[in-house]
Length: 261
Image 1 (cartoon, helix red, strand yellow):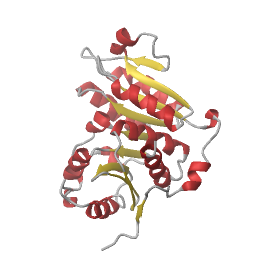
Image 2 (cartoon, one colour):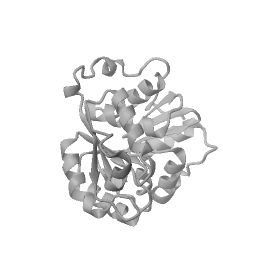
Image 3 (cartoon, one colour):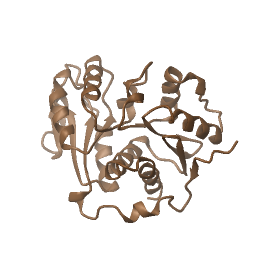
Image 4 (tube, one colour):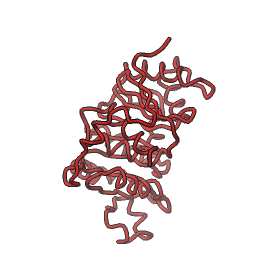
C-alpha cells in the first residue's frame, strides 16, 4: 500500500520557499547551544559547531566539561566550561549552568562525545525534565535515552537524530511491534515511522538504504544521499530553530541542503 504522506525529495527541494525565506542577517538567524565532550574527546561538539555555522545559524555557544579546559584553554572562544566528574564527563553540578545557557538559546543540540557516566545521565534527565524548549538528541547524547519508557518520546520540542542501529534500539524497547530490520525496504520503513510518529511527540531523522528519512507527525520525507549524523544533527537543529512552526518542512530542507553541498 502506498503512503500518501510520503514525500520524495530529489535534486529539487520539496520546500523551495523555505530556502528563499531564510534570515539574511545573522542577528535574526537564531541561537544554538551545543553541549558535549568529555576528557580528550570533543570532536562531536566542535564538528557540530562548524556544521551549524555552515548551516547558517546566527549565534552559537558550546558547553564543555571543565576537564577539557587544560587542552583547549582560551583557544575556543565560544566555549563555556561546566563542572565535570573525576572521569571527565559532565557532573550533576552543571545543571544550573546548562539551564542558564539553554535559556539564552532558541535550541539545544546534545551533540555527543559525552561518554557514558551515571552522573551525566542524572544531569541529562534533570535537564529535559526542567527545560521545555527545542532539544536535538544525537550521538551518545541520544544513547542516554535509548531505554524502556524513554522520556524523550513523549516530550514536545524533541528531535531524535538516530543512526539506524539507534533507531532499532529505541523501537525495540518502546515500540517492539515495528520490528525494524536492516533488511527491510525503504517503503516498509516509511510506513512504520509514519505510524510511530502519529502516536509520539518526537520528530525523527535517520538513514536507510542511502536515504535520509525525516518523520514528523505521520508525514515522512526521503532524500537520497549520505550524511554523517553529527553534521546532519547540526543542520537539522539550525533549520528547526529558524522554522519552529514548520518542523517537517525545516528538517526536510536541512537534509536537502546538507546533501547538496
